[in-house]
Length: 398
Picture 1 (cartoon, one colour):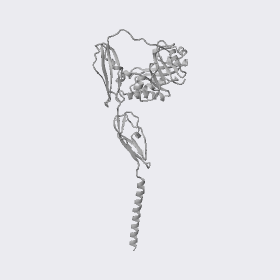
Picture 2: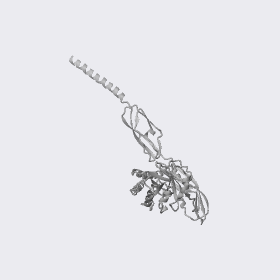
Picture 3: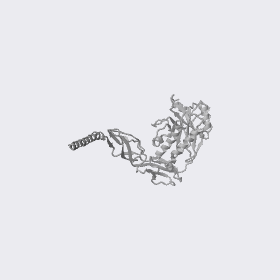
């Protein structure tokens, strides 16, 4: 009898445990069921250097993404890992394949025609900029025949192809002419006073930019002539991969301008072909500014476009070079700015934000971007400077 009761009790205990375990499984198993659904964009494709995030390719239901920026600096197929929280708040990992592609054709910067003298070299090719947003060495060549020892007009094409097969083709004319003894050195000089009258506006500031080429300057006369600000060349890189050199007249100019109350900013002429080189130049500029307070920005002036093809850099690299210089300037407590002409601003300096000093020699610029200063002529004249000088309009608060 006791054995039977014991058996019944044991069976009851086992049944209870089995039922309890089943109930536990059903209750908690259902509770832990992951109801989160991930939807992936197919195919997942991004343009090289584009600013994209995980959320551009993954959509989540009943959960939350840890949205992050994706590295798109390399062409090809990449595995992208990401994190998310499911509907119960548990952190999980996901993954998808992203194809980074380049659909941007190379940039060919040339004139519609070039004129060379009979018997000259074909150095006109050096003036043609052939660059790509990604490739450091796109395939660039001239198609067509021409003879430099024979006078004539030669219709040619310049063709550039990058590693992704994107192609740019532009036609131009090469004119081979007899050597001429005439000179076309005449210029249409513009008086500073005429500029002030033509662009009369109480919100505008009127200024100039100077370097050693203006030699000795009478700053008192400039002040009396209505010059309100001056951009002064602090220094220049002697040449590609060379050291920096202080402008011969920098100290004289900045002291002279400040002495009479003319606002000043400075610029540095660079041949930098790497971010490291640009950062070192910016540090050199900051070092040579010690003891001087500026009213206006420190400017990065990179104009060696005819050398671009030999620098082994992409257009993206060039933008990062300028960015590196300007970031050091800003970190050091100065305002920073980029100098460039309208065409280069529209076609080359396109992938970073900066205050702009626009160079566009025209009476009315059609540049659509924002700019802080406008250099509107390099044939200006003003009492206090012998010879010609660049004239600028400033759109900053007085």
